[in-house]
Image 1 (cartoon, helix red, strand yellow):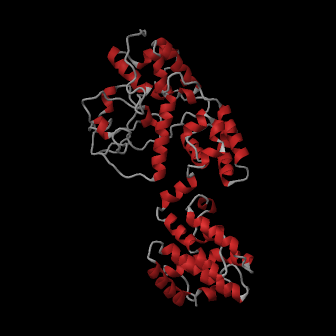
Image 2 (cartoon, helix red, strand yellow):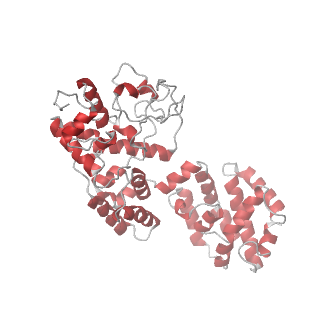
Image 3 (cartoon, rainbow, N blue to C red):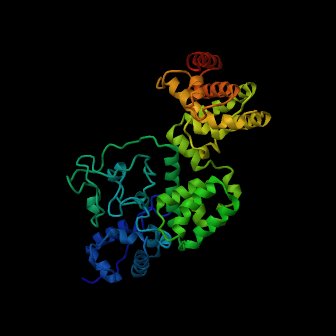
Length: 434
């Protein structure tokens, strides 16, 4: 059956985050004209094969060519706005993260009979976890038979399960998201807005190179520069870029995904880093929201540590509480500034010995507070050599034990009142120092 151009609709949701995917739009046009998908494949000169809908995502060179030919054939340049065609030079076929042959859907959208049902482009991105319109979690499997839903050319099948034929309009889930998930959701929506802009040109590989080179000049030798180069250089070396890798690259750098793609030189400049708390802080908050409160409580104890004669380096505290040092860089505010000031005023005689022994001593103190340690106090442990050093000066031992216990108690009880904390600290010293 020969393909014949027919009057066609515009993409649904143009100029919004919910712009329709080209596969969804093409399926509706084929249904209206009663044509089989193979007719469009033949008209575009494509290999018929299994008629994969993912061809029209535009993420491969062949997909980009197919999208260009379709826009000419249908005399509708706007169809490119429902694809990722502008990313085909830097992205892999599996760029979205989700299976390109399966769909995800919003249960509220699926049950709305007053609107045309379609498949938004943003739902194909792994980073999009909730519906931008309704705020509920997207579904990936039928809640009744747990079957995944394939991307069908038949729009009538988008509302019911392919396996058990049950309706996909079920009770929505409004589960709260972490701060990092919310950031990824926002970046996914911004990426859709970027790709669906009228007349958007293809993003070249030189864009990533330009960003990484600019970043290296601004952040030479830092953990951020090392992380971004570790991720970004893999693409430079020829490995295709995925959405997940692009998100991590942006988050580690403290900028938005669209900033990297649209203005790489400016995104790599220092001013954009200032108002933005990086991925390192976001990871901490996603894992344990109370962790920032705890370590800021430790920092506020700088005055007490100064009277004790030893203000530990932040890196030693981080190792002691099991937290990567790089995650501490952006935490806190005035409390950390004051803590660093305390450190500059203190010159502990046995500093190197203390820094070597403190992290493991903190871990021993935390085990004792949780009732999971061996018998004996911290003093006996460090003198017996189970904590970093076998033979240290008695003055160092006392200071390390007292400092470690103070930090451990602060970490375990970050939000108690001052009087209550001092009572807990005194009892802990009597019980566990030895």
